[in-house]
Image 1 (cartoon, rainbow, N blue to C red):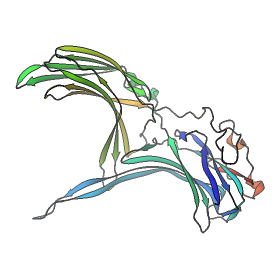
Image 2 (spheres, rainbow, N blue to C red; image 1 turned 30 degrees about the vertical axis):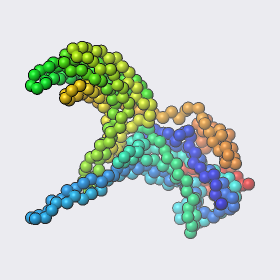
Image 3 (cartoon, rainbow, N blue to C red; image 1 turned 90 degrees about the vertical axis):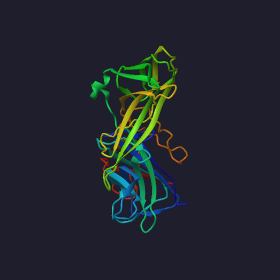
Image 4 (cartoon, rainbow, N blue to C red; image 1 turned 180 degrees about the vertical axis):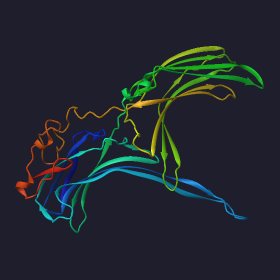
Length: 369
């Protein structure tokens, strides 16, 4: 079988980080027999890309027919792409790894300006860590894990979002040219900035002065992602997602109603694309008033800002049994002291390797069976 129990473990339970934080991790694998390698390294990569196909209509000359072709629109930006050798070196001499359990610690400082991890219909922002055993004249052994980067938005930096907002809408109804009354809608918000998982208190004043019934009122919070292509030219593509909604009772003819409702925002990973030129995100609160008969509906829209809080790396550790079932255990708790003080057996003593530095580098140990 050769290699088994190949795993990458980081100092956060779900690989969650914020820009500027330090990733501390371990690469673990077990060899059933000695293996000749050129090196052991990790690759850390951050990439944003968008792509879709659009129709491009081309009109021919005299007596020629127009035709439609599909053009690929795309753009991408690489935020980082770094390789850290934990044993050996690029282009170095090959060496033998002994049979048994092997562990390599690494450390990497994330850039301070990164967009949030994202995967949508027409694009993505993806961060990965890949561990590689460089096999001379053969296929490399690889293991990859995905990082969940949360780029925070601090409400204290946007004080105007704490101010209330008030919107009005008015609609005159007619039937066969005759005025049948009017409908007035007012919406009050305490503020326009909210955190994920927070409730949005909404107050609506709805006055139905018409002879038509209002069948229902809907409150919807939408997330709108805008994708920007760079090649072959700049184009945009939108994708909408309904985050939450609430349906309210209707209003009879010549009646009025006051609504005070809470619309709860899902507690999910927030998006911040301030540092990405190819992606934008908007949040819109929409109020729809559905009117019976052949009348168009009323609508009020208010743009909102949803805050993203930084990832807390000081939460209770979950790594005491992280390698349970892998044939070895690690009593060291990430986050308690310097990672360089974690118990490990240096390969300097076992195999004659030189330990790389821990600043955006790594160190390693092995245990023979």
